Each structure stands twice: as structure tokens, then as C-alpha cells.
Length: 343
Image 1 (cartoon, rainbow, N blue to C red):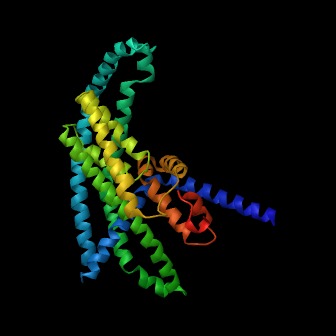
Image 2 (cartoon, one colour):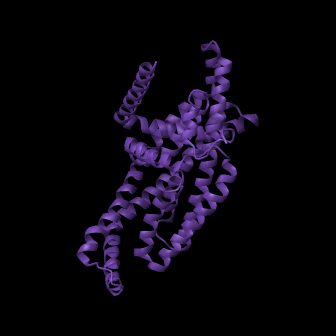
Image 3 (spheres, rainbow, N blue to C red):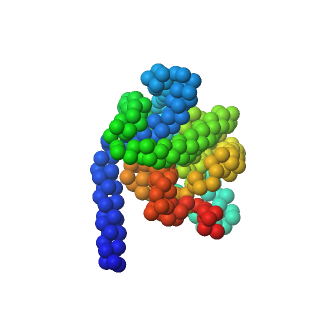
């Protein structure tokens, strides 16, 4: 029995490795499909709302897609222009940051901190720091260029989803139970993604307004990054704040950079610690270790897109594991709380 159980575990681990290797190899195809599924899941509640008001399913799909295309097109134009302008000014920002760091060296020497210019330029290279920001923004720009391909995939997913339940009733012998289980799973996924997306959108808007009021360059771009990184709990807000703080430092000075930091801290404390837990409810969370490992795994698989989708994807896996008694223990280990029945 023990040998048989060990063999099952080995086969299961080998299967997971093969699947991950296949996903990595098919990255170019998988990323647009995953983004399209993400958008389609978020759009489903709006389709249901329109259907409840008597709007035909095909017309509801057209309305939702029109909103997505208009919003997505405007976002692509604004963000692409901001990224191009930032990359054009990047050498200027790098030289300003280098000058700022060199100007601070005498203050450090007065405090008897053993540093010199060569040491700082080696371990705290401003060109490298701003170059990382530029590379990340270039990755976002390449992602946005595929947005219309993603929208086309969303069109077919939504059109197919309208008649999927009828097809399943004919195709499966025990379709009613399968449909109920699938609907319960999708309800939890929709709840999580809708709440998280709404809070992330509000976070991005507030960050944009705060940076616009402080006259930081490209506030819409940093607001978009704050919205995307808000899907990653704990460390996402820190990652999102770094480029905006660096830019405020070289553009406006230390005082305004501190105000930017203060704004990010206040926004994320209010949204992440007060508002989000109130609406998200219990059981829709991941342990910090799982968050970190998910970020590494999905980031390695799919790059910046994988980092953005890492927590939603892991959360969907956790919800799926909760649906079956045999895998519920894995979902408990992935969560950040001990279930009440286990206390």
C-alpha cells in the first residue's frame, strides 16, 4: 500500500512538471488565452445583469464588448504614449538620480558611514535601477499591443458561454449535478475577481489622482501599475510604489518623494486592510508563503503577465481544490486562516 501511494505521488508530481513545462513552451499562445479568460470571467456578472433586465444574450455581449473595446482602446493609447515618453526621458532621469546620489555622499560621510562614490555606483547603480523600470514598462507596452487579440478571444468565449449549459445538458449523462458544481465554482471565482478588480481599479484611480496633484510625470501610467500590482497582496503595493517614488525623487525632490510614499502607504492601508477584508470575507485569502512562491512560479512561467495573474490563478486553483473532499486539505494549507471547524 505504501509503495502504491508513493507511486501515485510520483506520477502526480511528474504530471505537474510536464504540465508546467508545456505551459512554459506554449507561453505565446497561453498568455492571451489566460488574459481573455480573466476578462471573460469579470464580464460574466454584467452579462447576467443585462439578461435579468430582458436584454437578449447576443445584444448583451455586444454591449459589454463595446465597453471593453472603448475602455481598452483609450487605455492603450494613453499608456503607450506615456511609456514612449518615459523611455525617451529615461537617460535624463538616470543622470539626475546619479547626481542626487552623489550629492548625498558628503552627508553620509558626516554621519561616519563608510561609503564612497565607487562603492555607491557599484552597489546602487542608478542607471541599472531606472533601466529595470524601463524594461518593466516595455514589457507592459508589449502586453498592451496584444490587447485587441485578447478582446477577440473574449468575444468568442462570451458567445460560446451563452449556450454552453444547453450543450452540457445534452452531452453529459449527469449534467445537472455537473452544472450545479460548475456554477458554484464560478460563483466563488466571480466573487473573488469582481471584488479584487473593483478594489484594484479604485486603488489605481486614487493613486493617479494623488500623483497628478503632486505633479509627478505620467500619473496614469503609475496608477495602472498600482492597479495591476494590487492583485498581489503584501508586496504588490511595494513594487508599484518604487518607480513612482524614484521618479518623484529625481523630478521634484526628497520632500515630494516622501509625500508620494505617504500617499501609497495610506491608500494601501485603507484599501488593503480596511475595505478589502470587509467585502472579501473569510476564506478568500492565501498565506504569505504561498503568495511569494506563486509570484516566483507564475512569473517564471509567463513573465510580467504571470506576476500580474499569479494570485488570481492561485486563488482559482484554491477554490477548485475546495470543491472536492479529497483535495480540500490542500486548499486549507494554501489559505491564510485555520477553518473554524478545525479550531
